[in-house]
Amino acid sequence: MSAVGFVVERAGALTTVQDLGRAGYAHLGVPRSGALDVPAYRLANRLVGNAEGAAALETTVNGCALRAVRPLLVAVTGAPCPVRVGGRPAAWGAPVRVPDGAVLEVGAATAGLRSYVAVAGGFAVEPVLGSRSADLLSGLGPAPLAEGAELPVGSERGAGRAADVLPYGPAGGELVLPLVPGPRDDWFAPGALTALVTGEYAVSPASNRIGLRTVGPALERAAGRDGELPSEPMVPGAVQVPPDGRPVVFLADHPTTGGYPVIGVVPEESLPAAAQSVPGSRIRFVVLRSARPAV
Amino acid sequence: MLPMGRDAVLVETEDGEGAQALHAELLRRRAAGEFAEVREIVPAARTVLVAGLADPRGFAAAVTGWEVPPVGPGSGELRELPVRFDGPDVAEVAALWSVAPEELPGIVTATPFRVAFCGFAPGFAYLTGLPPELHLPRRPTPRTAVPAGSVALAGPYAGAYPRSSPGGWQLVGTTDAPLWEPSREPAALLSPGTEVRFVEVTA
Image 1 (cartoon, each protein chain N blue to C red):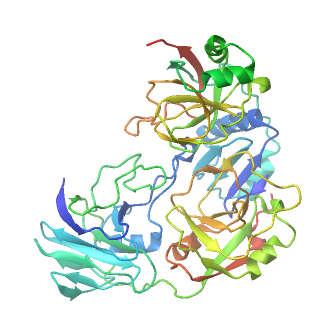
Image 2 (cartoon, chains in turn green, yellow):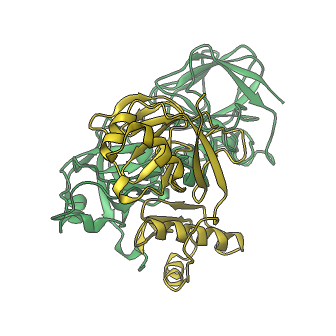
Image 3 (cartoon, one colour):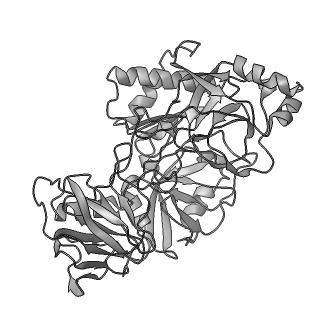
């Protein structure tokens, strides 16, 4: 059963429905998509007793406001932010009851970028290829929240509440990105990896769900390695270097193939921190040579 | 054989046919129960990605020893795509091919195509099969909106746009085939390995 649970009063800068995404369809040109900060998304679901993979909301920078049209249980995690229910302060990072008619206000992030709002029963928008995630590259899944939109909430529950409150918070300041070199590190000038590790890079304001863009020194190509590669498959965390030389770290909505060389791949467990890093944050790339499979 | 992060391997092949053959072999082996943990097997122009491997080193070592049969006619499911040759670039393409515009439909419909890989948009298939002398440049200025269903050529590829999007390919026709329907299984009419024939229709 899924009936309307919330009406959107304030959509925020960009609020989307997300779950664990559409893994397994990359060969059809379908991006993985899904929550950018998976641990925060999972925690929100655990706090309200949802099953693994229930759909939640991912906000960007300035939260959102939702009016409940029946009593609901919610939890807000991810980027810390003020939470209010019916105008009164409520807990962040803990289960919160929202009475019928009350407005849940998810405020602006005080650190990080993206907060997660889970509701008991999950947001029950229509799934596409097994996922309710909004994929902003290819347009699959539900549209981003708009003022006045009605959000269905399901009744499916998990095995029971697995957490009441858990310590969690995005690390502030510098973003450390480990990097496994390859597959196309040989497309760059000798010393490009050193330049990446020692250069002063910062998170670009042009970053989005497709990729974390960087500002910093341009990485030079090796002699004779100009232009593009024949299209090759991409993975989350791939650090692709377009002709301007500024690395882009692919996030959940990245294209499935691309023609610019990938100098290295950031392991997936480091991508949530990347997705929570505010523009201007310093980035420190660390090369994981030992992790490179000898293939 | 190239590493792509900690649990994925990018296998380089000699050419596009090699990538198609290796992709077909990987699907056969997965169907037979090998590397069940693998999350994605994604072919592209001259590479195949295998992601989610428990033992990427072992996998990479094993792949080099495989006997991979080449792909040939009849090795994939055949789809016929009805096409009206009404694209705005027919005359230009015919000129590049040094043929009369009326000859273009016959050339395209006589060519056996195969889906080499998908990308760019869900359900957009890169079809190979054109001989080198018919390969075409992209348009110097991409169109901001190519209509859904457009049948197009560029480089060694043919393709059909599942939905309207920007594009720099040469537009030679239109198809009404349902290329992408997320509620259908499979969602994509054309997937890697599918054999494709264009069939001319006039209405």
